[in-house]
Amino acid sequence: MLLVYTLKSALVLTLLYLPYTLMLRRERFFRLNRLTLLTILLLALVQPLCKLASPESLTQVPVVADTQEMVGQIEAAITEAPIYVLGNPEEATAWGWQEWLALVYAAGMAAMLCLRICQLVQIRWAMRRGCLWRQREDDGVTVCCHVGNGAPFSWMRSIYISEADYEQNGRAILLHERAHIHLRHSLDILLLTLVEAVQWWNPVIYMLGRSLRNVHEYEADDHVLRQGVSLTDYQTLLVRKALADTAYAFANNFNRSHILKRIEMMKRPPSNPWLRAKVLYVVPLLLFTLVVSATPVIEPLLIVDGEEVDRDRVNQLQGDSIAYVTVLKGVSATALYGEKGRGGAVQIETKKRAEETPQGVFDIAEERGFQTVHGPSCAISEGGR
Image (cartoon, rainbow, N blue to C red):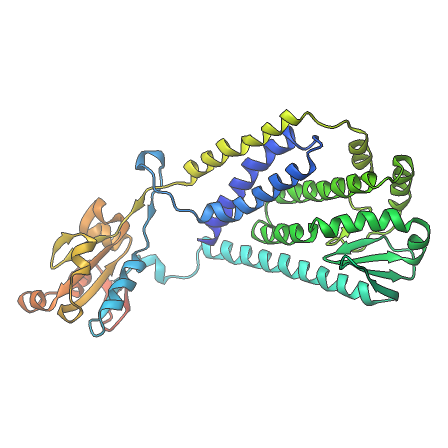
């Protein structure tokens, strides 16, 4: 299930992001572009969790409803009747390629999370190491002045700046970093990190991450220029600070984005407001991803005393009237019920029926080559006794 989720998530993200690079990336709609990218990230997380039933003709591989959910409902209603499970024979064998692939995926996700956590710890450590003075401003921002000539950056509500930068270019740099803080760009990075952990194998998520960080810098640059800082002086400052070392990749760095892109965006004239309508491309593509990921849900076949029934009939059964419940999955169900059983089957035998027909599911299972193990919630697998 985890692998299916990450594949669907990657499909949503890729289909929604690639048109953005063609239609909106070069426009000066900084806030709109940021909201678009954040919306794509949220949809990549949420949309795969939405279950949408569709006509079976729309898909080749139907999704089988969770038979275990039905079993859980029955278990909640009865206390004494045992439940037996007939599964696919291969389920009892060693791990297959899907299990190993899931293990590799989980390891990659854990490695990505560990990397980001280490970067966060590094930021916290950098804020404290070599700090000459720390000052909390009226707007709640904490400025940490440090020795050395490290590149300025901000994270959450703290700004890291060297003593030389503070004395020479303090106003422009602090305006830039304050813009990151007041626009809450750090929260965007946390959301991006979550999606990166889910899609660590997908190169498109890293492309989107660069686009989002670029938009952050465009927003901060625009804020600085609106405060009266000279365009020429500010661009000169960017070029000079581009040579400084950027050690904290997780934070909002003053020299984070490609300098030429930022300078080009500053010189670009305002975009036509009507071009904002291009963001509507998200709507048809989102509907398309919903249709693509939608699959028919096949309910398990419900059998009570040898007769096919619906859920309402099962819910009407009294717990003390049930002798035992048998769950058939995969080939165990299709062998008995054919195409009807491809979603699994739940056989419920009442005590009255069990007294009349002494032959149970275990005799049938043994005739078909399954080894039976009696007892509550036991599994039945292929093989001799």
